[in-house]
Image (tube, rainbow, N blue to C red; front, side, top):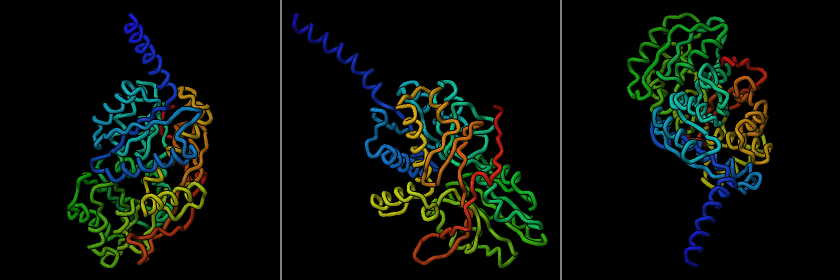
Amino acid sequence: MQRRTLIALAALAAAVSAPALAQSQIKIAHVYSKTGPLEAYGKQTQTGLMMGLNYATGGTMTVGGKKIVVIEKDDQGKPDVGKSLLAAAYADDKVDLAVGPTSSGVALAMLPVAEEYKKILLVEPAVADSITGDKWNKYIFRTGRNSSQDAIANAVAMDKDGVSVATLAQDYAFGRDGVKAFKDALKKAKIVHEEYLPQTTTDFTAGIQRVVDALKDKPGRKAIEVIWAGGTPPFNALAALDLKKRYGIEVFTGGNILPAMVSYKNFPGMEGAAYYYFGIPKNPVNEALVSAHYKEFKAPPDFFTAGGFSAAMAIVTALKATGGDTNTNKLIKTMEGMSFDTPKGKMTFRKEDHQAMQSMYHFKIKVDPAFEWGVPELVREIKPEEMDVPIRNKR
């Protein structure tokens, strides 16, 4: 009899403690490309997310007395996998919110899942405009920059009368949305050719030849705008052709991860714009990230590390404001119009589409023997209020 009572009491205690434990946790799913073509980006985002959560909580990993628990899920860069993993995170893991993914194609598959489960998806670092545009719903926030922010900032370097531009981009959401936004951003320069190549391209001969043929006989300044993420970037192939010397064709592009920027050394003086390079933003959060990253990894934080860190700062800022309450509607109300500090600078979620408004940094590449990569030297900060980033959703 006594044994039966003890078993019953133990079962009751377990039943009570399980919900109590759940209530004392804040569960976050990070769905990202742990493997696949954007693996390098995804791993940096995860590193930044964890470092950011640690920094934002003062090393406690708690908000409002609740422990933050991060559940990692590998979407492999595949839309169908990302979609099912996010559904499992909301339904089975009972996460309070999710972060990710790495790829724009995966993100677009995941957006309806957030709406179905009525849970927040904080998009980082997927870029396509359509994520906060025509495919958006109210559960979607984005700390990553969008195609329009990239395009407007990158257009600054070349948007002048008499400039002919060809684009070289990947044939999926990131590339196509990027080119569309870039065309919209140009007011003076003329697009003469758009070249789209598969994400997995390694031989650029035919694609680059079509771009060169479209530009080489044009009068005035000639430019190729490269919009490329992951895989094999085309910069070594472009450099091998010595286009500036042979045809007067210049190459422009945005920021990237440091390993990809090794090939930027072939383009001294190349201009573009990026949301982050560890040596550019001057603020206490970036100083903390750079210091902690050097201490742990003996290397500077990279492009997507800053993005993951920024997502963490947004999450903790919102949770501190709600006292740790993870009620979705309360979080949405808190996050709309919310400003938060990040390594990139101060950012603000725009109420209309939940896109984070943020500075971009116009750079010029300098070759410095002390660095393996082409160093982006700051030309000037392009502040959020200087960029007329279109609102593309139907709210």
